[in-house]
Length: 356
Image (cartoon, rainbow, N blue to C red; front, side, top):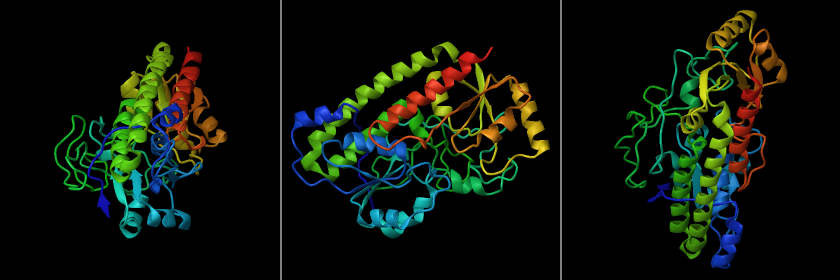
């Protein structure tokens, strides 16, 4: 397995037009595999006019609980390039990449230069998140290691090939791949559009190095993608400006990059299992917390049944909303990143604008 030697820039929605101006691809496209939908969207935008990347975690599946399929294993074995966020998010990929990704250049995007990284927050109003493996909303000890892991909290690679996690980031402390939250960083990096641009830059650099014949197309697509992300960023800020001071609670503390970028007020998180209805004591505990935090809205995610959401909200004055930070309900492709981010902003604004 040879990690990529460079990590740099990205692509676009209108990239198809720009790709056409560069001219037809001059070589066969590399075989590219991507772990999750938001990253796949960025890769697909940069590859427009050249080829289409394969996606591992498709449909409504989550990287926190995903089990690799035989078709995924075959794709990894045939890949020339593999993009994933890294150990902290897609823990299920660690061993398959070692066993199957031998011929591929593997790009770990949590190491992309220019990322803002934020530490996990737990304690106080933020409960440890467990991604569906808790009993009646309480942690099933040890899942945190599997679900999120830790990196060296904000390092940047001088050269990915070296894989010598050193240096630091303003937001996190060095900790190594020890797979717990201590000193680790939140890996939902793409929810800050500026992080998406940094990841896209890394994607473009890896593609251009692997496929120099199509480098001009990748570069043009990246420039268009960057411009579209900047426009998206401005649009989302305007959408959220009227409601950004209203507090809300989430079922899954995945949004701090979005919160950090746009100044919205996440008052706290509630750990609830999508598979298990919370008991009476836990429901009472949650109701007390929602009232204490003065939450205007409670946001669940698509995997939570409406009945469960209603039980959690009953007796509170909070409104209900749904957020989809991993694009579980959206079709994969170049437009997904934009659709996902707009949907997050619109869902927040719609719910919070109804609150008193």
